[in-house]
Amino acid sequence: MRIPRKLEHVHHALQLGQSGEQGFADIRIVPNCLPEASINRICLQTVIGELILSSPIIINAMTGGAQETEAINRELAVAARETGLAMAVGSQMAAIRHADAASSYTVVRKINPDGIVFGNLGSEATLEQAERAVEMIKADALQIHLNVMQELIMPEGDRQFTGMLERIALIAARVGVPVIVKEVGFGIAQEGAAALLQAGVNVIDTGGSGGTNFAAIENARRTAKLDWLNDWGCTTAVALLEVLKAAHAQQSSGGGDRSVSVIASGGIRSSLEIGKALIVGASAVGMAGALLRVLQYEGTAALIERIDTFHQEIKLIMTALGASSIAGLRQVPVVILGETAQWCGLRGVDIGMYARRNRI
Image (tube, helix red, strand yellow):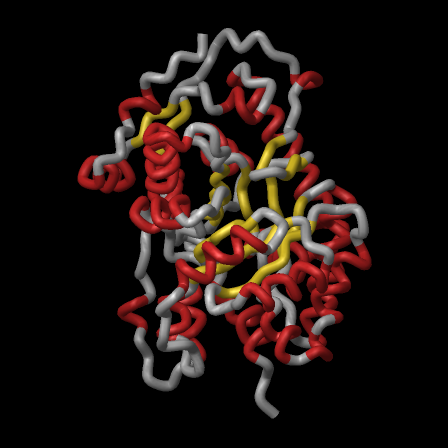
């Protein structure tokens, strides 16, 4: 009997792991020897669109749609409930097409009735499907994932991608909850980010390379390999800087009254990487593969402990830098070097302004 595709994805994600080459090694934090801060006064609260989150860490979309994945989502929901994290489910299209798959998603709301939960659909979704996805789990926001290269490599994937932006714009305008558009590991560049902002999207998740590699996962499922596409895309650090450039441009050109939030995701595994993403300008950080590995190999209690450790370590970093809030972190100067700096120089991203920040 053929293993369901959702389970294949989980299996290959665990087997292949994460490269860790998401670009944050190129970002160096300028230290502060006089921080004037106390760890007891650090606040981790952040804002994504209209949502207030108690933590800048989001359990990003992973799975759902198969009976066996229900247990994964259940335990992730337990961890989210116990640590106060927002959590996204995997694509709900399976449940929209097959009602018997719904429990693998609704379990998240059942376990965490008062938590912040994100629904998830692909860019092929209609407004009616988006409304059903939100209603299914009483979602506080809806992720729309972009995964063109994954679909093209996937043996049974889509080959037609017209009308994506039009559908996203309609859903953003009418679905009734904040819409988050995210990549799945190939990164969003400034041109794509600008188009999404123009279409009315206010929250963008960078989804850069360096984490779970869906090109490699789909190639592992293929007989005729397309593994020359396994390095497709840009790193998470580059995608974050590109999206922030588009957001700054949008606000400078008359959109200053719109609140734009950027989520950094793609291979982020440590508190230092979380801190760097927040310093550069992310409002939150999405984590998936790193958390899934802890859950699958060490259990739910270990995952809760790991998240609590992240929180304490982020507070330590913030104290050392004299930033009592997530907003305060954005005043910390950083120096951007290496391949990330080279990319930004050629793409017109002003990295000098990050180094010249004045936190006094």
